[in-house]
Image (cartoon, rainbow, N blue to C red; front, side, top):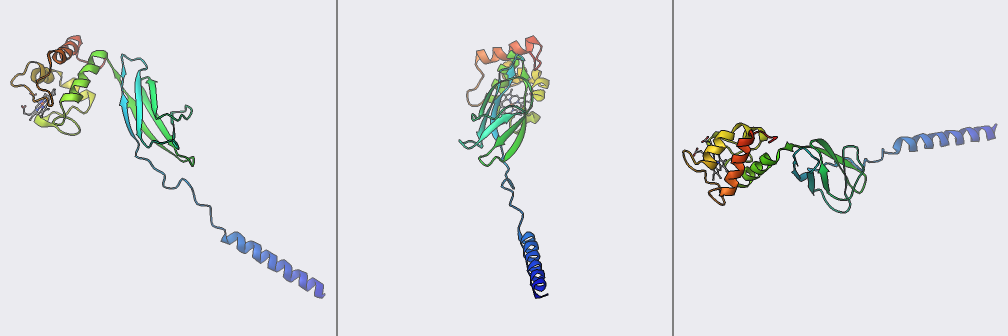
Length: 192
Ligand code: HEC
């Protein structure tokens, strides 16, 4: 009788301890909680529709990070080359295996348009790029450049009614003007 009582008490104690310790165990902290990267990159478009676009990641970088595009394998290098036109999902993985993603698009440029885009990017900021729209013209998108082909010709090639102040080297060189003219003569499309 006494032994049964002791066993019962022991059992009760064990059950209590077990249930207590079970309730007291906190959930393990998620090592990836709050992991988020403001991914920075520089890309070049695919010219003539072949796979010659590229993506170069500038943040986050370091030997603890690996990167992959879409469902590809992770790689150590923050540089991807030979990209065909299309939409990509970039996954960045840190040393704890935590990941974050960014989406970007590689556009398809014709060879003549690619040269014009270079001229616009090089000479038409800060007045018409990154949100600026002097004279109501902003050239941040390819569509806005394509749609403004005649005004680009007027202001940067023919200088009618006046030449644009294409800082830093104004006016455009004859070679650069010819690149714009060639693109316009070919049909002034993004694919030309
Ligand atoms: C330093 C500033 C500056 C730079 C650089 C500049 N522009 Fe302008 N642009 C202006 C200003 C200011 C206006 C509005 C006044 C005017 O039309 O002259 C304007 C207006 C325009 C317009 C709209 C008016 C029209 O005639 O249709 C076009 C198109 C244009 N610029 C093209 C260009 C191109 C192409 C480049 C680069 C090759 C360029 N601009 C570089 C300042 C600039």
